[in-house]
Image 1 (cartoon, rainbow, N blue to C red):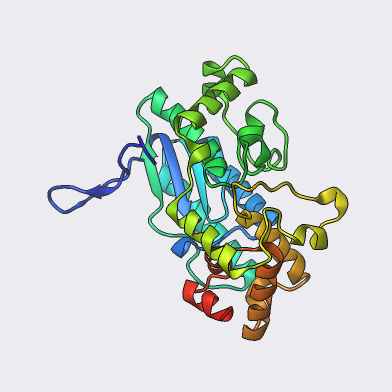
Image 2: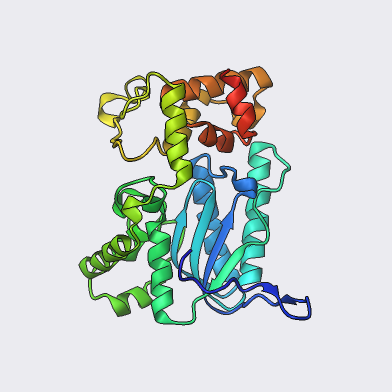
Length: 302
């Protein structure tokens, strides 16, 4: 998170925890415990947004930007009590999630992260960073293609999320007269951060692993023909591996009426093998989706 202020918790010289900054323009981030995939279905994302909306009303908070990724969430907040907001949101959502999937494990990594933005410049950069996250992660080529962010609500107020969360847009409207100016500034930010050219060492290793373990791997995964109708075909390019959220879409089709967490060991192994055959998913992706050890996933294919 280059250019961000230090997190608002830490240690002082007396070895006492510094109090978290509670009020201001705050970038909030929370990840799945052990970086595991949390949001398996659209319903999971929608429920999180609904609870964000309720938490805002309860704890004097507004949301300027958000993005929901596969295993973490970013929010740009205007708040006076970030801890109360986060505690109510994360506890309630964890309870709902564990009840839905018949789980009892810790869902989110703690403590959550929060960074106070002390200037308008850093505040705007934070909003851009949030919206650009899916592009940086290789999940899409354009911010416009990703439906689980606040981008579509800032000027157009449309998309899947419009009825489930409110976005405070006055700061954006003050800085940009129209959506075209906003898009230009956002694209300039992406270029300045070299986001389109970013590919981590882990991504490169995952790509190598996939190409050596799946002889049928091509730039366009073959499951497209077997899972989707002709009108539903997806567009993949050679720059990115299959996005995790698309692997999850296929997973849900394969599961049918079953849920991931009710499978026995043999059913799970068969599903992992089938999912890799049909999507070309990497071992790392499968380990995160199934919340299993990376080496365990590798051993299945030996």
